[in-house]
Image (tube, rainbow, N blue to C red; front, side, top):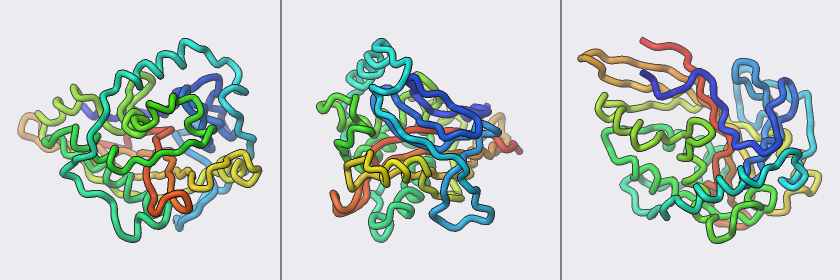
Length: 274
């Protein structure tokens, strides 16, 4: 059975909801981020910043709000997220997986595409810890209030790994240790084709309005096709999935190269099996 749900979006939401054909102001419990959302068949509307055969057009805009301005915030949800983050062991940066280097570290679209490709290209016969350590090695810190304003400062160095592995609210890009072990028994592995990288219109609007003060922080939505190959009862099975990630990065001028801050959204939609 494929590890991918039929349609699932990774929002740890506090008072913000996904509205069809509207800008989604996605507020995580521990931080606030902005993406353009459309729940119809998992689609996302956004402004294109890279080439694509049929670029969608953004027709709605919205004004991001701080976590304190979001309706319906419950302290219990916030406390639960912080407790899970605090319980996450610190992840070492030593990983057999190579760091991203070269031109990809100097341009946010290239970095977003390469980060997504490497994150989702998983060999379940190898250690899950290798992927977590790789994420930690690529992590970058931001103090932007609209991104990590509710994350305790002493826990912000764990945010990157937490954002790609916590499965309390939904599926995550890196599966649980139990799921990883199951796929290992099936000789599981994935291949990834990155199809598009774009900047959310709501994020652009927030920057232009001066709501975001960190000059090095940015956001991208990355769409990819991910094929999971497994061996079950001597037969090879391939599950093809359309995956979309909403990601945040920190780079120039505050850092010499781009690094990963956190994953805000994760959607996987099965396209077929063979």
